[in-house]
Image (tube, rainbow, N blue to C red; front, side, top):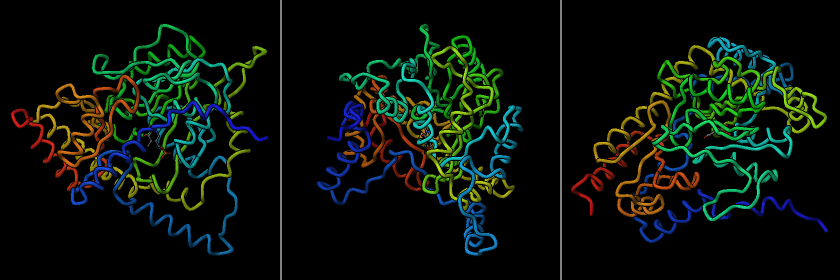
Length: 415
Ligand SMILES: *Cc1c(COP(=O)(O)O)cnc(C)c1O
């Protein structure tokens, strides 16, 4: 008799986005004429940069000629792409990262889950609350947690609450943890971390022999020159951190698929006999065995991000979304709603007005404004009373959504 991985049965059934879809579909069925605007799921809306398109078209032609055709590429990614990344994203910022420490993949979502393959079963794992749900659910699937309680908190995980009180940056834990997930600029709160905050985490990790998983999917949205783009800008991070990067949000690759993970060769973790094992070797082995590389065509598209034209075009894309975020912040603030984030990030984290719960605000916004956002409580218990609005949309949709919300919620207009 075949059996299942029962860890999957611990996953909370009513997952956030299906529940949102259910409520939106029910509303749309009852109100077929309502012009719904979705500022919910974090997906980009604007087309691929021209430089990336051109590079991919040329790569398709190469694949059609037997002289330039490519079969399997290196599992770790082509050297020419890894060199550009190492040079441009790291060495140019003073980070000591070599091309062979960069592993090209088809997404950060899979990498942040897959990385658990090379770690032991008994690590103490810390996540922020609220958090990107992938970090939690992949640990549940891997059997690193107990059951969930009514608030969706899993036994065995260490939850570090983040709220306006701590500027959405977690306090360094007093207990010892082994693996720590950090995401800056943050999804869902839009918060950023200063060099001092990251340095405190690096110090903690080094003194506890812990490893930080640093998700920098939104680094391109940093406009404040004092903020770090990479954790390797912090001294000592080579010895305690793995960094995840993606072309999804800076270059609109959510449907094209390319990302990378940085595993420094100096990074080690312990085996049960007390010896230190290089994590680079394990990740290299894992990728060589379970992954066959990213499409040549897509890697050429990603390489074009680093051309002069590509750099200009991704800057324009990011600026476009940041202007949307600025409009959202400004309009909601004018309506008397407290907002956070949205300055160095494409997400605005809203304190729900009138102390509404996250889901009550969701329903009210849907019913009165026909605008869809994401309830903060879906990202964790401490997200209750907050709401995420995404800047990934057309300018016209953002402006129209804000017009409806300010009309409805401006103090004095409230029911
Ligand atoms: C969008 C996003 C990513 C990128 O995921 P891909 O699989 O590379 O598209 C990674 N982390 C967070 C927190 C994200 O929101």
